[in-house]
Length: 153
Image (tube, rainbow, N blue to C red; front, side, top):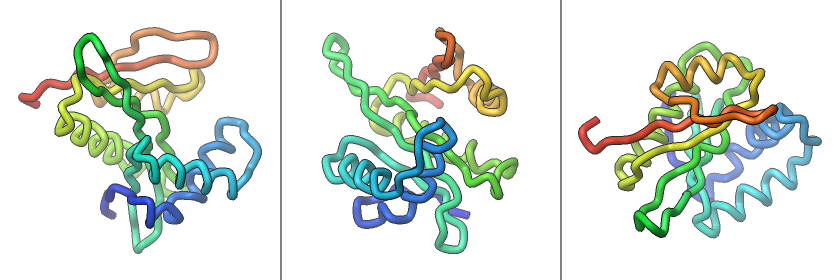
């Protein structure tokens, strides 16, 4: 298994996973919408997508969006999407994808990575906290987390 950064020309690798991710969050299945959304984000350099590849098939992905601060004149990152094919869960793939996203953000000069997850997604919460994300707030549906980055890590 390897982790790669997806370019626009490789978008098709993660379209099904992205559609499955949307279904997980109670959205209707729409493979064409999933494809168009991902292609547009990658074409416009509006997101960064990493995929876990096994035997030339994507088995997991994560998507990050930039978060800008005018005051600090810096770009941080939001880990917005993380999904691993259910057949490949409990093998550390989600953690590897997150670690790749963190390494990318750190190299990009970010000071933190933010994310949120559903309040009933206990597996994800446990993983994020194990990696060092700190819960910084919540509403009735989602918990917000932040991992501060330092150049020394």
